[in-house]
View (cartoon, helix red, strand yellow):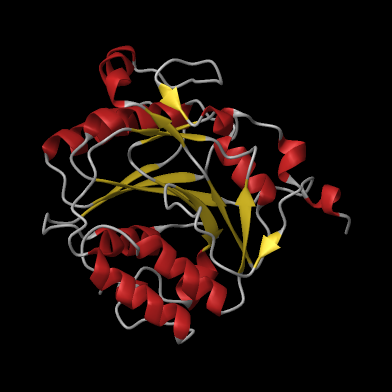
Length: 273
């Protein structure tokens, strides 16, 4: 089938999964941007790494008017356990395709549609992000702003605000991991994720979990494709997390790459029925 025709096929059913931790102000903007989507995901799962009551209260409030099922998967706060809470959330997902973002992301109104339009078997997608700057945060949260464009105040990396779907077709499939990969803007098939046993819970603290999992997808023959001029997201500024442990995670990732590891010991299989 010619490339241009495959995007006319029905979109796959999808679960939108977002990790969060004790930042309800940012999560509120994410949820508002989901309500603003031109094409809704079939469900939304908030993967909560131990947030306090303010986050659960916010989610319960949104459930009352949310246009699609909104689920809250929570575990106790025990340092950074993002791989574990993401595995738990994806294990509970009902649909074949997973779109992964972060809890500090605001999505362009066509974000979900763009990912689903480009979804293809044996392929994962990854996009970039526009950065919302620190000095703009007060205004951002007061006004609950969820729409941006090339000329908007308070952002940088403006070139990433440009959406031209036709140009996105110029980017072809890849069999190596890109340095541009970001977990705040990815999508993949659930069956592929399960084949590599999901996120590696032996990773310590923040960082590397997304790229290490993607490397295992590449190791089983799943190809990557960059979303450029589509799948736009805006990342809310925050202080960088502690990276003192990052060398431990990099060693694990390097072993995954060099030894072509395809399946890890401690992953999503703990939570599958």
